[in-house]
Structure formats: structure tokens, C-alpha cells
Amino acid sequence: MQDVAQDQMDHEMISGQVETVKADVIDFALDYRHFGGDEGVTIRVMANLKGKETELLRFDCFDDAPHYHYGPDGPDERLMLDYTAEGDPIPWTINRLRTRMVPMLVRAGHPDTARKLDHGLIRDRLDQVEAWAQTLSRTKGS
Image 1 (cartoon, rainbow, N blue to C red):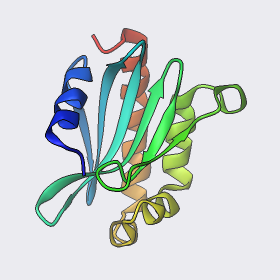
Image 2: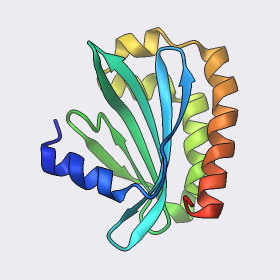
Image 3: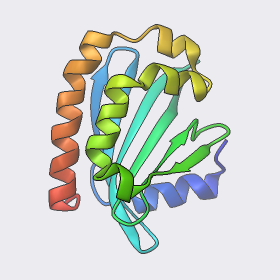
């Protein structure tokens, strides 16, 4: 679990309003963040678990060091994205959410949420997520 100082640091890194796209049992939360000398769009997969808003997956589509997290509100396994091999992190992220979200949620420790997903609704909502993420990237969150 994140401590209070980490929560405050995460809040301070957000450069604008958080946009939320609801998709039944999960929500996608998007914002533009600055961290150290890096910046970029963050896409979170959120769910209300036992009455607490919980971050299940997080994709930091940063300019210099893009990476993603399994279970950021728990064990927080962080993996770097190879920009050379994978290219732009936003389309990479959207593709992973379209095609690999179930096994990613299971790996993050949330198999019950993975079983409850409405895949048709998620496909529709991911079009909105992608459009908003591209806009945030172009405008740098302003």
C-alpha cells in the first residue's frame, strides 16, 4: 500500500484534471503527469474493491521512460517499456488493454474483477480512452 507521502507526491505530479471513462466494473482514469525530468499521459485501470477505489493497473506513457505497473496499490510490480521495440506507448497501452487486460488483471491479483468485465463495453470505451489520451499527449495536459 502507498503511504501518505507517496499519495501526496502522486497528486502533485498531476498537471490537470483527471478524466474518467466508466466501463461497468472498472473505470479508466487519465491524466498528464510530470515526474522528475519526465512527463506524459497516465492511464489507470481502477475499480471499487470492498468500498475502496483501487488502482489495478497503471500505464505511465512518459516521453523518456515509459513503463507500466501491475497492482500499483499493492505489490506494485513495475516493468519498463522498450520504446525502440514497442514505439509510442499510448497505442501500445490501448492495444494491451484491448487484447491482454484479463491476464494482466489476473497477474495484478484481481481475477474476480477480470471475470466480471463486459468486453463489448470495454472495447467501446477504449476508443474514448485512446482519443482522450492522444489529446492529452498533444496538449501536454493543458
